[in-house]
Every structure is written in structure tokens, then in C-alpha cells.
View 1 (tube, helix red, strand yellow):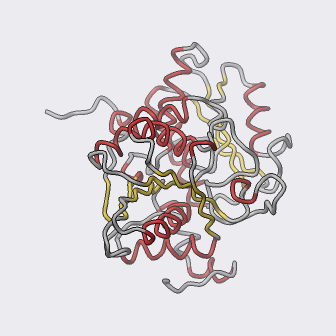
View 2 (cartoon, helix red, strand yellow):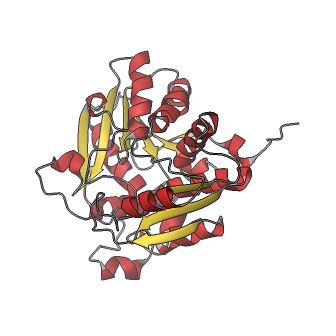
View 3 (cartoon, rainbow, N blue to C red):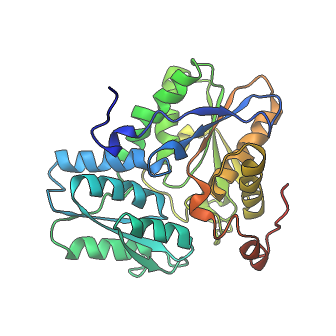
Length: 320
């Protein structure tokens, strides 16, 4: 019998899918992370961060997990909290979709919404509110995916080895969106240890610090869960060989196209990652390009896949 002890044991071993209808040469393949039980790549780091906290005595039975998140890490932590008996509180910026807010609450998470435009150091930002609660609530633990070394370590231990094995070591390019940087950093570190010639491509929304630079035009954007307005401790920029910047229009359009052409329902960050990776795949049809699709589009039905919302915010409803 193949019976898992808990839903947490089903995390990982997500499939690679060739995007040959989007890109007929067939050299672009997607690592589809919404096959994880909570629907995103973030379950990998949620388990790793809580496992480490338990080992180190930072989180004890009956404790409270508090995390600032755009939604997906919160769902991952909610899964862990449900299985292991922890209270979970998530602070989120108000640009996060209602679908994601409802999803967090469905898992029993206490959700606190804060203004998106506030800087991380502002005590009323979603980072600041999380820090305040962690200091006030007895037995609270703040994993802090932006500085926790177990974030990239989770991908070094799981995502990287999976991609290498699934491609039989033939991967030439790995592309992923960059938020906390844990996914691309951990995966890149493993892949480059196996083959230093693997090219790592960071895909970034227009307005994020990674492609704008600290003195550039850093501004708000609609694509959720990716890009930053500061440099997290969890990203190693030296591992990233190339950057592709994708604006909101292209990210939303590609997400919608993937659903119609490939039957892959992902959010705007997934659309963004594929749009950037597609540019690279078109340059050399002999190069095997793997792009990580971080989550499901089910968390964005009221936005990315809602024609009224798109028109209201100036986006086209046409499929590119």
C-alpha cells in the first residue's frame, strides 16, 4: 500500500511538462509547482522552516506561527499548522486577491490586511505588523522567509535535485521569478554544482528592485508574490546570470494564454516567469530551458481571469 502519513508527505516531486503548444520547438518545459497539495512552490519552504524551528526549540507545541506573506507561504504554513497543531497568523498587503485571502481563512489562518505601499521598515506594513505580533504573543515564531536560510536550503535539497534528475542532467537553462530569491538561489546552487555551465535566468516584474536597481524606478505593480522593493537576505544575486523584466500586461496575458493553449492554470507570476523564459528558449532551440511555474491560477480568478477587473485596471482581455 502507498499511504502517506500526512498531507505534508505529498509535497515535492512535481512534474516537468513540455510547453510545445506555446513554443513548438519543444525546448521549453515547465516545473509545475501547483501539484503541491496547497497549490504552490512555497510548501517546500514552509515545512523546511518549521522543521528547523522545532529542532532548534524556537517553536514548541501549541505555539503560534506568524508570517508576512503574499499568500502562498501562508498556505504552506497553514498546512503545517493544521497537521501539527499550531495557530497561524498571516499579514498580507492589500493588493493580494480576495481569492487568496479566502483560501488562507479556509485553512484556519487569521488574516491581517495592510497597505501595499508601505515600506518594510514601516511598523504598519505587513512586515512591521508581523514583527510586532511576534514580539507580543507568547510562544510565537516568525519564520521570516526573507532572511531564513532554510528557504533557499529547501530548494537546494529538493527542487534542484528534482530538476536535475527529471532532465537527466541535460538542463541548459533554469528560469524562475524572483521574490525572496529562495527558489532561484537554492535551485541554482544545486544545478551549478552539477554543471557550472547551466544558465540561471531571473525573471522580474517591472518596478521591482532586481531589474530597476536600488536607485532606479521602483514602483508598485499588480503581479503578486514576486519582485521586491528591498534585497532579501535569502537571495544570492551572484548565482543569477541573466535577468528578464516582464511588465504586468505581458504577465497577465501569458497567464491567460497558458490556460487556453496548454491547459495550465497559473497566476500572473507564473505567466511572468514563462514570458521571460520563452524569450530565452526562442534564442536557441537546442537549449533545454526549464521554467518554474510557482502556483495555481485558482488564487487569481477574481483578477487575472476576470475580464471586468482587467478592463477596470487598464489591461487587455485579449489572449496574445
